[in-house]
Length: 75
Image (cartoon, rainbow, N blue to C red):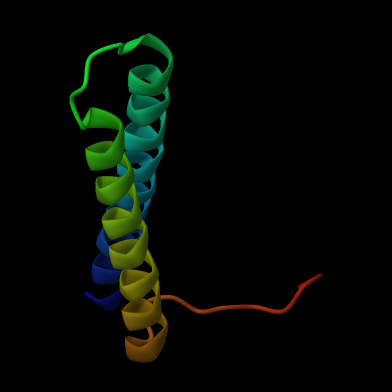
């Protein structure tokens, strides 16, 4: 059961990382194509910062509970 929980947790970390990347590119698109006075670029940046902070907290929680096991550089 521990192996299933660890796999599900790693899947959640991957999904969060992909969400950060999607919001990053969404902000880039708004920056390049949007000419209006809307605050879509700032909103995308706020979402990216929030998701990145949540991802860091999630990784910290995973390490603290033993669901993720960090290893040294080079094995």
